[in-house]
Image 1 (cartoon, helix red, strand yellow):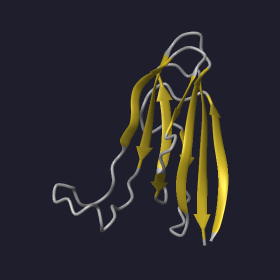
Image 2 (tube, one colour):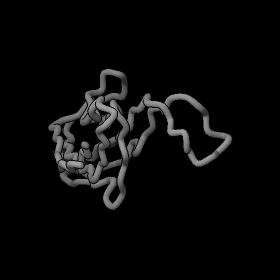
Image 3 (cartoon, one colour):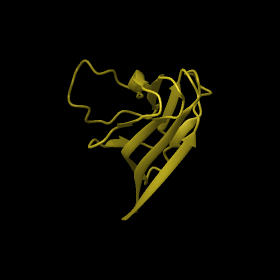
Image 4 (tube, helix red, strand yellow):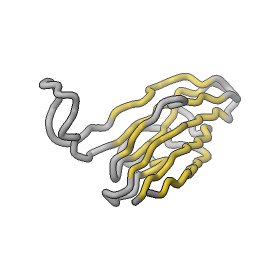
Length: 130
């Protein structure tokens, strides 16, 4: 298996959530590729505070082993906020996912939006391929 470390960057983000929110990263559609998100850095380059949200957009099928919780709906995953409306003070950065790992399934998408477009984003991840 090949492990390839990668980075995706974006200077300025969408200012509202929606289907047209530009993705920061879309996991490859190949079912043989697994993506592990390692870090997400959000930098406020504006002169006042900004509220930022990060969404994991997923419509892939849930795992057969979803914790054996009878309350879990069957079918596809749903879009969820990793953070929502978190304030980043002017000219500072926030690293989320530090020390955590997120496994992305094929076609899963990481999106970032804010109440002001002046947010820079750095996403570090590893793609595992056979």
